Image 1: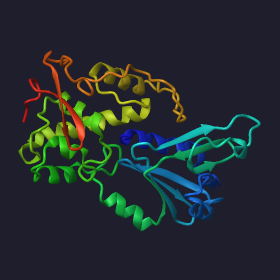
Image 2: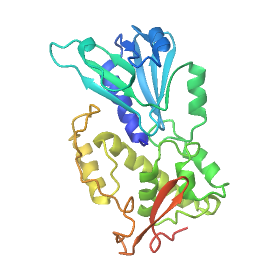
Image 3: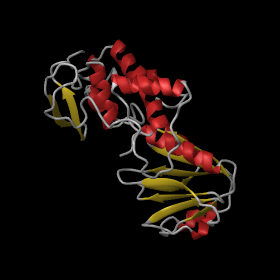
Image 4: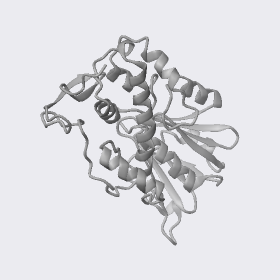
Length: 287
């Protein structure tokens, strides 16, 4: 399932393509046809992300709620010169197509694709924990739940009602980066440790948005931060496979049995919180 940085990057691509423009909205697959007809021809106001949820605001106070789930994809593609959007072929089961004179965006396989009201948007966001990528995020809200929970910190980081947007890769890597025992109950976690986790998520997720990939190894992180500071950001992703800027390498994620990059002990794995957890049993003992 795409982690939060992917959805925030998608919202930015949609805004760059359609903001303040009237858009054509159709449902080639037919499953969203009735709602698409209500939205067709309206002005695209803005897209925003909250955790793993995408919300698109259109004029007349209408909102589109999208959750990609495990297999969903929302590809925003520039239309070539001399090609009309209606002439772009539909490939696969396209639930929703958003088009303008210069771009076509096709949504396939989402878990949620629904026309919703502003109150329903507020309700979904209200059920989420703080999102490290949103300026309105309050880490105190997450700490209040963590500090009272018997669940492990590894489970809590995957709970979207505790922290929105964090997925399995970030939870494994952030806990390793701070030597934290992933099986420690939330109520036994020190406040200073939570502050370290939150600050690291606030540091790492924007790099995921900028570079279109999860970066957690410190040498990659420092280099990416320097490139962002210098204005050397990579080309914006279009939803097509463009390759990666950095090697896809992690400290623990999917490295079962391999040596820990810090202490050379073997990386362990077990199912926890519905996903496979990866950690080092030797150096991740910090409470």
